[in-house]
Image (tube, rainbow, N blue to C red; front, side, top):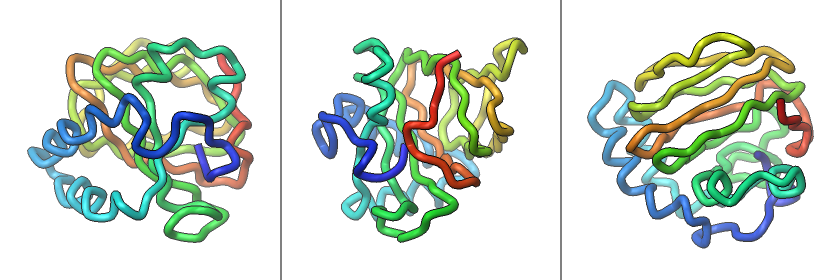
Length: 169
């Protein structure tokens, strides 16, 4: 998820999922963390949208890739120059399944919009709501599904790792 080295084409404003960004930002305004969505909207021009090269190399399908994008906030190449934590905003379009995957770093999600569902390890799918904080310990399998609306969240890897250090479950 982090930095130019892991980007694949399309990047920037060419990502198909960005057609859902305005709707996601509007959705985020109706909840307790509206100020975070508004702050994100105010700095969009300084953030680079990308996709993880590993997802294409692993043969992820076009439905997923067309519905996924990441805006880097903190990274060695981001507007906030940091090696750790690496963070930014993830945008998923409507009706997207982010397949089960895992990675070495601990990861947190701060949910900004309603309507998504989560699965951790072999547990049942559960609903997440704006304001929910989800922690994935190292190498824990997790997956996400969106409903009829786009999904926006702040996400961060709390430990150093290469962007491509992702494995599919």
